[in-house]
Length: 284
Image 1: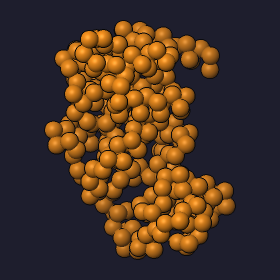
Image 2: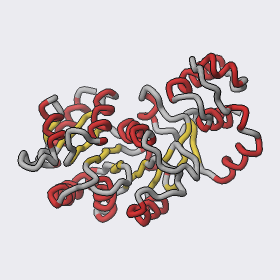
Image 3: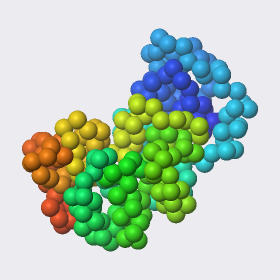
């Protein structure tokens, strides 16, 4: 009953993530897993109608039988993600869930990545995978795709977090890569099959990337960049942010340089990342 309630709540439209978190916390405190639509509106402080009553038993059963998923109440749910302000109540997945138990490093950066970004990842990835980091990114073109590909080619493991249903590949250029991850690594989404890309899905996706990882490595981020959102979320969650500096001439790394000025870790070699982790472990 608990997991079915969480699945239904996660799929209900008309209630935002903060409202859903309020409802979940109330249900957990009171160990009560049945509500009426009006109760949910009151608990979520929402003035909008929601489609809670549209989720029939048949619709829920169809999703249960056609999707692999875990809820925030499951033991397999990633521990690090429980501590973000609005953790996803449900994660749909394809692949190896055991990867969520390992230490993860997110890698984010420009979609229009340059040869410099490609070469930096090529240089850093062998040591990162040898150290045992699972590389987390968003399967976007550019730095995301490079990060996944180099993790695989260096016999490492990688997790992709997408902003669509798991049956949709976005962008299409990442299609083969997404299939590879779903078969031999792991792909996660908080959206059920059939969910097409929407602008607001990607900042939501980024909070999962930041939340899963113990640190975020940023390459080639401009001043106005989705990568900076992920980096800021990581900082808000108390995670380490590592930044590779770039050229001051082309603007491709202007956001990276701002992060460094704001106190992020400047990375010129993998040892800069390892030293920060070793220091953290020493004090914990």
